[in-house]
Image 1 (cartoon, rainbow, N blue to C red):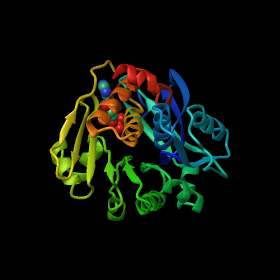
Image 2 (image 1 turned 180 degrees about the horizontal axis):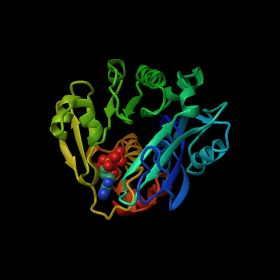
Image 3 (image 1 turned 45 degrees about the horizontal axis):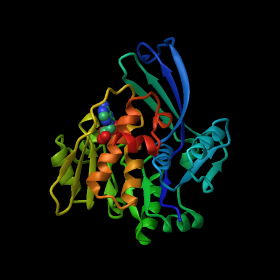
Amino acid sequence: MTGIVVLGSTNMDLVAYVAHAPKRGETVTGRAFSTIPGGKGANQAVAAARAGGDVAMIGAVGTDEFGAPLRHTLVASGVDIDLLRTAEGPSGTAHIVVDDEGGNAIVVVPGANGTVTALTPGDETLIATADALLLQLELPLSAVIDGARAAHRHGVRTVLTPAPAQPLPPELLAVTDLLVPNEHEATALTGAADPHAAAKALLRQVPEVVITLGAAGSLHARRGAEPVIVPAPRVTAVDTTGAGDTFVGTLAVALGEGRPVEAALHWAATAAALCVQRPGASTSMPYRPEIDEAS
Ligand code: ADP
């Protein structure tokens, strides 16, 4: 039995560090470059596996030179990739320019991720055995809806990270058990700047919401219960990339173990706080003993 299945993206992040980002028609010389395996799906899978979850990933890598390292990153953290497909052509890539003020501009090219448009019968069989299915919006929406519906049919909890932000179709919301937007995504989805107001609006569409609030922690809201803010540990952040994915992956493990939701949110915030204190995304995600020790 697999506890957590992630249906999501794998991307190679191609990161250029520059003093200032180039304007249209301009060429600038960068200071440094790195290739970092990422993608929201893969990042959540790595976070959940490192937190002690039994995790499998459904998605696709390409036949280019990035396919092997993307697979390796998952395997090295203990993620089962038996159902990770290989699609002819390039892997997903994220072209990221980080400037000296820490701002960034990103172009994501879906590549192999774009070929995952529906589930296979094997995918559904795996999902049916899970405790939870983790979804994001970096695969074609048809696959996300297909996956969420399959999970719902089998009584498997669906956890949707609505990123990158886009309007969510009613048929997806209808089969979403837990929605985990960050503050910006919550505002984009509802038009409400205040997280309490956004949570209230979202609860009309899904039964449970966690809005992540960066250094301020997270807001949990469930139909029929008082909303609760769970603070984040006070730490010095050096790179917040992957914080949200660490949070969701770790949260899914804790909920799967039957922990009460506030304790689960506290544990997830501990893991995310460890992640932000180190550079990188998947590379900076903590393993279970470290999370336990810090919480
Ligand atoms: P995203 O990474 O998706 O933009 P957030 O910025 O809300 O999402 O961060 C997700 C979670 O990571 C937060 O709820 C919090 O637990 C943790 N986190 C993010 N930034 C910090 C920080 N500066 N200090 C401590 N924890 C943080």
